[in-house]
Image (cartoon, rainbow, N blue to C red; front, side, top):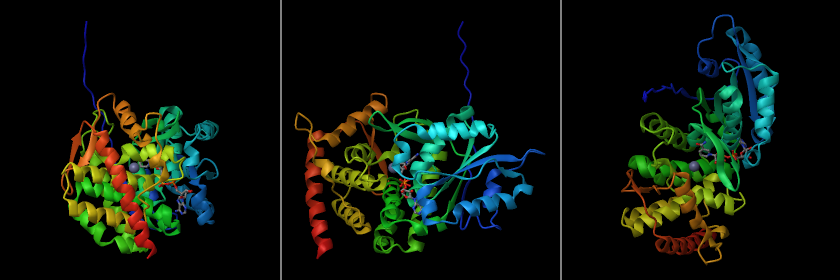
Length: 394
Ligand SMILES: NC(=O)c1ccc[n+]([C@@H]2O[C@H](COP(=O)([O-])OP(=O)(O)OC[C@H]3O[C@@H](n4cnc5c(N)ncnc54)[C@H](O)[C@@H]3O)[C@@H](O)[C@H]2O)c1
Ligand SMILES: [Zn+2]
């Protein structure tokens, strides 16, 4: 006997943009929880990125106060908000699964409770993974606190930690219950972390929205100077493009091998590891994009002048487009960065599929990568980065 049935599961995606989310009269988070089942308050655990709390010392108290004020509206803190290590360090081992899993068990948070995660992409990924494993998935509300997290990482349906020498090797696909982007969080970011999200904005603009791409190029100086209005607009447009892709792209759980939002990422993920995480994700993506832009120009997928404009904009944002890890070679003299191609292929299940630009705001998939051309692109990028660095000094 043979039975075949098809079923599908639908998700609602709730994304809000706000300011001062924990101000007593702000109701965005309350609305994000959704209707309260009669008589049973939503039990919540809150995790805070310790880099965020260091920059906002009153945050933990404001969160506790907000929940106190809204307890009669059906939301209840199951425990005091807990700080967790911010940055990639939280993704480097499995301690976070133990910590969050134990709290969920000890504080009787069931699958209808909530884990509220406030922090950068690394904290969202790691705590999100732990929440997705406990009870096979406790609902999570994400409050991303960096440009990269508000524009990209916090919106995705993926989470994970690093393991066995690979980025995000252990993880799950778990859509968040809701995402609340508070622009006010972005004001305390260090310039490095502020610029990181802009690399993802360039990425998505390049393959989805030519108008946004030209806007980014035109506002490169304002963004580099940290002008809040420009940064907020870049983050918001990038977030909406990502959301459109996730909800309308047809393959949110990446069952197929096409991963359009991974332009520049085959090398970026490798570079993060090869640089021992001295490069953050956004910085590695900027270099990965530069390599793919040069490749696209050599393959005539993109106009030469446009490639120059985008490379110059990346340099204007403040990204260094070279890192010594790009020069690392294996026993056979091949650049180790090219290992990223093989890892991508494995990750996709054997068939290589790389997103490449196909004119501004358009994308195509390629299934072969010419390593000699890649080598030439790396050399060209080194020369470009040297010139850009000299230009920045004069
Ligand atoms: N799941 C996904 O779809 C996805 C997509 C892209 C990136 N990512 C992951 O996201 C991570 C990078 O995220 P990121 O760029 O947000 O960096 P991050 O999470 O490493 O945070 C950078 C630093 O900023 C601090 N910080 C956070 N908010 C702050 C604030 N408001 N003020 C001051 N400091 C603050 C953190 O403590 C940390 O030290 C990487 O691990 C990457 O793999 C995941
Ligand atoms: Zn990315």
